[in-house]
Image (cartoon, rainbow, N blue to C red; front, top):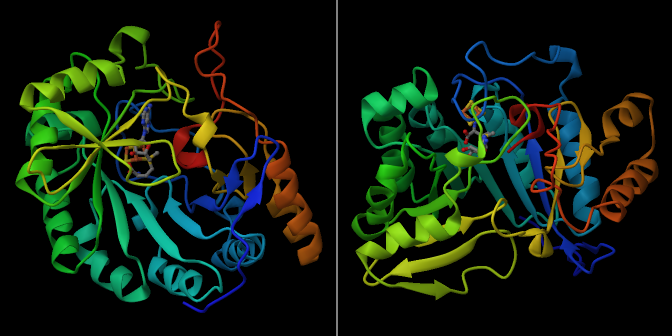
Length: 334
Ligand code: SAM
Ligand code: SF4
């Protein structure tokens, strides 16, 4: 990637430096995880409502001029959108972008990771919520754990680092596997991140008693040994630790039990081209309509700055009564 300007991010009203853009490239998915979607799926956007790759790229270029340095591609399931390696290669060439990563369910990883890696993808997060094939198929409503694990192994062979496994522990569903996932960081080079189960828009499966809090997850992990904190990254919502002798690290993401908003450095671009200052706030700024009206770059830059300006200090996920998002996580980009 080319060298560029020294600017890193734009400071928001609360002195957070926003240098990270998460982009949902599709609201479609080849799985129906119980914690994310109802079995019949969610209402889908029309294809023409999705941002084109050119529109995404234009947004990335303008964001990079404002100091955005990191891009994450997500969805929906990003690997089902065609020619993703073209998009990754194009983003890789945008001056200022230092890091491109992907969040995926991994089902199509085996066939796609070679091209993505050649295009410049260096890091992946793969969602795996059970290491028991039958249970994995139940949670995802039909996914094949073998395929996902084969894809992860291929990514490791290709030198993709880090490979982070995202797991959402749900009481009575998969929380008995917390230790097995933590053990992966000893037995393999993979990092594991435990994400608290969140009440996102489209699932009725969430209830407070199904949430396993970070403190409870940590307690179980510590049955394997003491956890040493790691100053892994200075930004982002995860807190990282490691077990003695482990190659991988263990991250905890705690939107429910601990507000992580003070270290939030990100903006989101939804699959239909709305800027979302916060995953949990319905405030959206319509970049796509501006682009399709023919707005110049200066206008898009103003909208990006506006999104940063209105970024809330903290989310309201734990407020009572709970206000649910009307849009599914797959459209916003988890
Ligand atoms: N399809 C890709 C995947 O599954 O990794 C990317 C999109 S998915 C919406 C992004 C992340 O959101 C995944 O790690 C998934 O586990 C997480 N997620 C979805 N619904 C969630 C929920 N209700 N609570 C916590 N995490 C959730
Ligand atoms: Fe699809 Fe990812 Fe949601 Fe599972 S978590 S249904 S893979 S978008």
